[in-house]
Image (cartoon, rainbow, N blue to C red; front, side):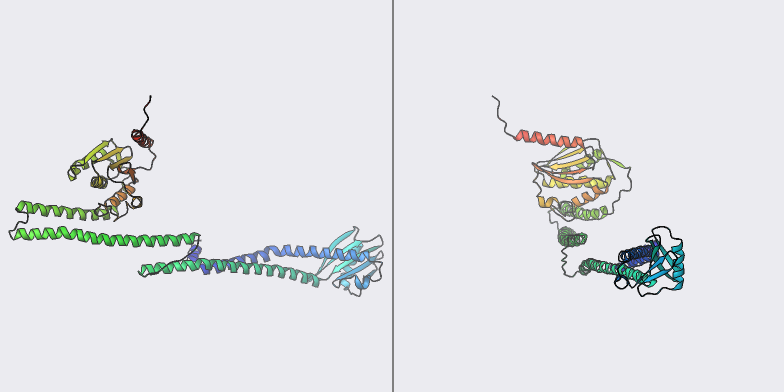
Length: 464
C-alpha cells in the first residue's frame, strides 16, 4: 500500500487521470465478463422464450387460416404440429434435423402440462423450443435456431459495451476538462511563485471562487505582506544605520578630543558623561535587535515553571522610575504567578512600561490580577489602522524608537500560551496580557468600572 501511495504521489495530475480511467474501465470489464455474463445469458433465454410464446400464440390463432404457412411464420422460428400417433407436420417450407425431431418427439411423448420450455444442446450449439398442448390430439412445438440466439446475444452485448464506451469516453472528456481547469491555474501560480523567487515583476489573475482561488488570493496577500515587510525592514535598516551613526560619531569625536586634551563639554567628567550617554543609547538599540532575534528561538521547554510576577513588576518599576520622574506610576498588584522564565517576562514588563511612559501625560497604571497583566496610561488613543499592526516587527508609533518592543512582547507572550492586545480607553490606552481562560471577575470588574465612569459623567436631573 505504501508503494502504491508513493507511486501515485510521483504522478502528475494528467497521469493520475489516465490511471483512474484505465482502472475504471478495467474494473468494469472484469465485472461485466465475470459476473454479468451468466445474467446476460439468462436474460437472452427469457427474452427468446417470450418471442417463441408470442410467435406460437399467433400460429395457434391463425391455424385455420390457409395463409399461415406464408405470412404468419418467422424465418428463425420453426413450428411443428404433433398428433396423437406422434406423426407431425412442419408449418412452412422449413427443414429440421432428425436428431432434433427425435428429441422433440420424446419430449412431446412425455409432455402432459399445457406449456413447457426446453433447451436442446448438441456440441457448442443449442436450440430453444416450447411445447404447448392444443387439445388431447394435437400439440404444437416451436423451435428457435441457435444462430438467432447467438445474434441476439451478440447484439445485446455490443449494445451494452457501446453504451459503456460512450459513458467512459464522456467521463474521460469531462475529467480531462476538469483536470485541465485545475492544472492551468496551478501552473499560473507556480510561474508566479518562480518569478517572485527571482525577484521579477509579475501579476497573477485567477478569477475562481473555489479552493484554488483561495490559494491564489492567499499567495497574493502573502506576496503583498512580504513586500511590505521588506520595505519596512529596509526603512528600519536605514533608520537604525542613521541612529547608530550619530552615537558612534559622537563617541568617536569626543574620544579623539579627550585624547588631544580638549574637553568639548568643558570638563573631563562632563565630556565622559556624554560618551557614556551615547554608549547607553547604542547599547539599548543593539540590545533590542538582539532580543528580537533571541525571542524568535524562545521555546516553552518547562511547562511546570511558575514565576512570581508581583515581585518581578516591583523590581522593574523601581529600576524604571528614573526614566520619566514627572509621570506617576500606580500599581495594583496581587500575588499572581505566570508561567515562564524570569528574563523573557522581565523584558515584556519593561517594554510595556517603557511604551506607556513614552506616551503618558501624567500617570501609568499597572494592574496584576489572576491570569492578567494590564499596563495603561492616560495618553492619546491608537488609531484603528494602527491597532492591527502594533505587534508586527518594525511597526513604529508616532514616538516609537525601532518598532521592536511590542513585537518582542508578542513573541514571549504567545510562546508561553498567553494573549496580548491593546485597547483604547476613554482617556488613554491599555495593553493587556491574559490567559485564554474566561475570567469572570475581571470582566465583571471592567463592566462595573465602565458603568460607574459613564454614570459619573452623565448629568443627572436633581430630584425635587
